Image 1 (tube, rainbow, N blue to C red):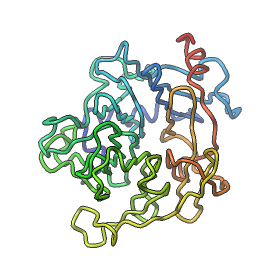
Image 2 (image 1 turned 120 degrees about the vertical axis):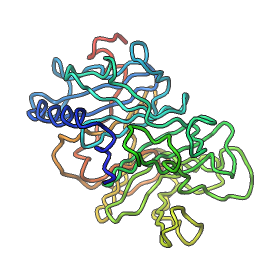
Image 3 (image 1 turned 180 degrees about the vertical axis):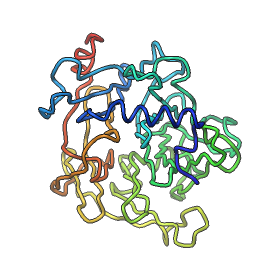
Image 4 (image 1 turned 180 degrees about the horizontal axis):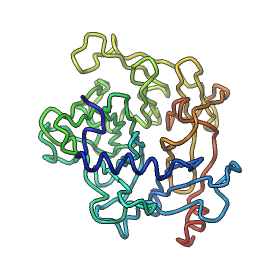
Length: 325
């Protein structure tokens, strides 16, 4: 069994089930990563009026100032079926797992924040570096996918890459031998810094991996790429297994992109600090199509998680959470 739920003990699995039951009456749970204040916000539409503007609907789920683990640039997050929130940090090069074990609406208590993956040099037994991770995705098999874009010292040897992580021995992390590997590293041949900028990743309904190429360096075109391990060797060979799924036409700004057939969506989620948002396991499954557009690919969302597009401003979130502006 390779489900993400294996990563917890029987006791923690029981707590996870209780947590889902505890929040069964929540109509809307959204987690937002704020890279300015180094916080994760938890949003709940308690009165089902379609917004988070009412009292007690915005709270601080994790705060670098009070948490047990450093979180200084939370660029991406994903929510597991058991309610665990995985957050990748592009500064510490860690992925941390956040669990609200005591149901108080935060993951700030002892044991609620743990390291899932250490991307620093020598940090994991597989020898895989994760530099400036920008986005996460979780497959139905519990495999965690990472869009890592090292814009500082990137090279053609795998710093800019799509990574595959799996907790094979159920010890709560992917730091052990064989649990991490470079699934795809664009072989550009130029040796330039940050030639490839993967900024979003998602598991498609067809089982393929889709990632957004930012393309701001001009070396690679702005596009949504489709990766399929056809020969089953665990990595992607270019060009046979890496194809441009959608090329982004030049446009002056980001426009929401939606593919109804594959269930792939992309669009800007925030301003003022580059926050990203992910919907938790309690949202209803529904979706809406938007116009194909241009700009710079930043995030990918699947139709099962996307109900509507809403711009979330961290300054407003801070005020609603009682954190000042």
